[in-house]
Length: 201
Image 1 (tube, rainbow, N blue to C red):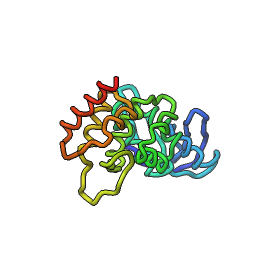
Image 2: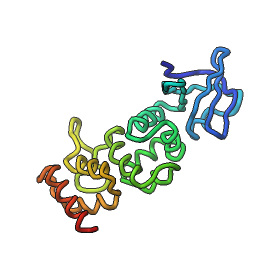
Image 3: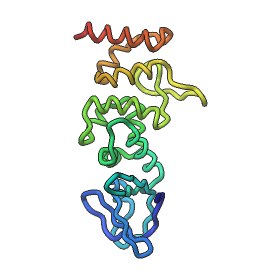
Image 4: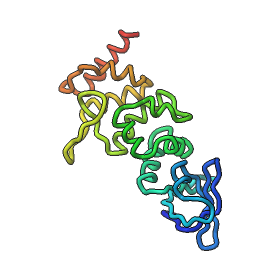
């Protein structure tokens, strides 16, 4: 398992590939746009954090200028339906701080900007990434609040995830949960939300 590489940049391509020579060996790495810009031109010394992706037919290396970028990549590919290519596209569009801001603000439009991400996928990503990026859900509505150490998101998070899994869009979910009391518990909230959605249609 390769975790990092330090060497000399031999080439960078517009298709998102970095060729890095380490000890006389050239390693081909797929990388997001931010990393390709950060490593510098051919002949530059470079250090990259690496995610080693093992498939049945190949071993693919992904390179990142920072550990945070690699962590976000691994969080993305850990979500349902997101492969390495889509994860790289997301990180090429949104650097880790921008991605966290988008997820924190429930900014579905920011995710839909990424090629290959539609509204339903974006909604699911918003829900899943809040947990994977350690961003607790604001139980009073869209957005986030800081929770004390050890605290967990309220029932609203469970209901949002369930509705997203059923294919409902961000606006539908937000409207269905508007003003709903969490004291009723996630099961009751889900029933009420589904009734509201059925009535709205």
